[in-house]
Image 1: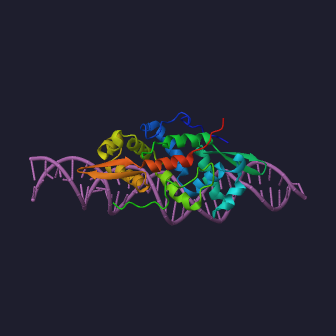
Image 2 (image 1 turned 90 degrees about the vertical axis):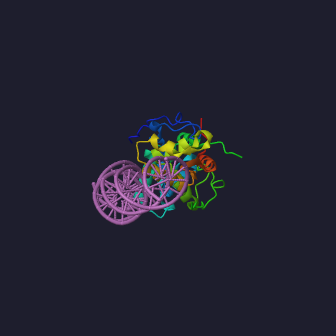
Image 3 (image 1 turned 60 degrees about the horizontal axis):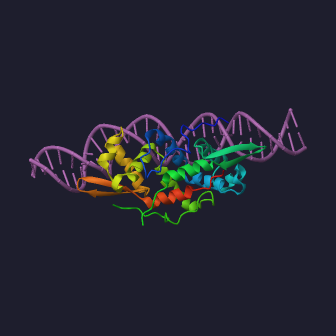
Length: 117
Length: 117
DNA sequence: GTCGTACATCGCCGATTAACGATGATATTG
DNA sequence: CAATATCATCGTTAATCGGCGATGTACGAC
């Protein structure tokens, strides 16, 4: 399935942006992940996958939730996959998606900040 | 300065995506914020602003950090502003930017997740 | 084998975007 | 006042993106 390896380990990169500036080398990978979430449909897809009971969802349950064609949903799922936010797994006729929780946690940590007052 | 009000209160919206699916009405605003961070230059700008000593940075200190023209940096700052991630403030000749920490915290919370193992 | 279903990929098109140079607005200085 | 500096806006261009229909691939049923 040609999983493309992330250049940077999501667990180690990076310090919260309120603590230190993101190094240029890391900015690309981080921005790619945020960019993948920067579409309403993809954000909903990601949240449906991440919050799914049992930790995974069949594409057949995702597609009918939107007023979009199959190829379009497939396209968005591919973007999420290539960003390393989700993983897919074909079992028989159906394809199942699950969230990469470590990646989500890393992104959350990057945005974490002490809120004043 | 025509600050455009967010449709949804960043402090109340939303539950972590690993907990519940993002409502369609909220997906747009959330995705817009992530989209703004989905560019390497903007992510670096945001991190430079958020981590700045004193909580704010002059544009004059941001522009020379990139191999880009002034208008291009101005454009990226505008995107960050319209996404509600930063606020600007002109004082004399210079314009100062500071991060909207509440918004960053809200986005961090949305991505927060319990990591297994 | 032939069908029908479930997704992915391909190719195309209209809309959006990042980048630039030129121009404009605002503030300080002489 | 004129001149300079900072930053935003305007207008253009090349590239990217989201959407679709058509086609391809993998699987189960027959």
